[in-house]
Length: 255
Length: 243
View 1 (spheres, rainbow over the protein chains, first blue to last red):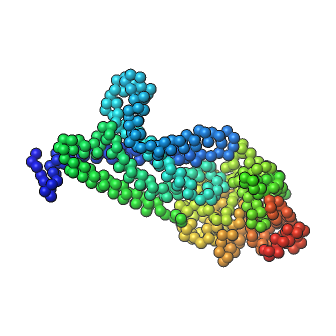
View 2 (cartoon, one colour):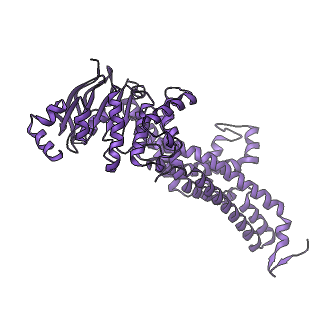
View 3 (cartoon, rainbow over the protein chains, first blue to last red):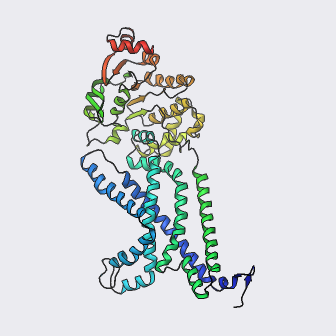
């Protein structure tokens, strides 16, 4: 391909030559981010509720403390207290082979395991690590959101005869969700950017595409500036979506 | 008369603080009981023990013969028979007036949306707020919010209504509209327990007044007896400050 120079220094032809690679990388980044936002939110809700679990009477009271509050607290502490990069490596090279291994995988072994690891290994590890990590951060957002709702709301609902789960679903969570939207939005943006770390275990997403191109041409401005702009557009898009959600769910909130 | 509430030796501690120190009382069907006393005397805690919003430290509360604090009691079913109105209204800010009123009847009683709607309609007429049916709580004045809160509690068709200082958070000019709704309810024969600082209301509407101080029922009687002929020195001292 003929050299195309923009502004006298930017080799646009390199980007054009690898357009498909960047496009695939972009798709992979978006896919991983989307999956991890959805799974991380579900996990975060569950962990957040577990951290707040309380019961009044004897067997359930101890159960809440030892089976729910303690494990969830340790979980959150670990995933927030260690680097995501290390978590990705740990899960990819240590944890996953324990479960998916051609020789003696606890979950899957044999030929299926070999294929799975070869074709989807990095994807699986990346998604699992990022989900577990996001779940820890999102659970804190849920916890703070739920705790910020006035106790009187729960008392009013319970005194009408609504059970605890119904009170959560109809009264507390809808109000908490409104307050959680800004931090959840920030978290989604972090997730999108952090997904670039998965390139370290060989997942062909945006950062991996840039590294491939940089390696092929020994040119660094072009690929990294290109993906920077792509990430930037994606985060701006996410911020816009969150802003619209906030406007839509803002009705009736007095505080 | 039928006894609907029976309290036996009720005590409540918050840590080392003894808030209730052995309360006994019995409330009959259709009776209106006002609970008065200085702030911090335990009267709100007493009321909140009646529907299990507070655990009891000792003693027993029976509502319709069912022990409120027994772990085996279906507390949700019990509470659906006991309406409660709070000092700070506690309307659900993300729901309209209509949705506030229909939530529990549809979810707990299994009413259809149409049935719940028509009940809400009736109750809003009763509290004079039909024109606010689609408003959100933050678009209403305090007095209006409290009247909606009363309608919300009544929508469950409770046998008992508890009021926890229902006018204390209101501007003075809005107190009357809320008390008028409560008085109408009393005249219909609702069983009511009202924690209040409105001595005029207690004197006019109550069948019986309990004076609680330092976690004990110091004195009780008809409004005429308690307000005009108090027997206890503490009652006299309290009344001289508030009347």
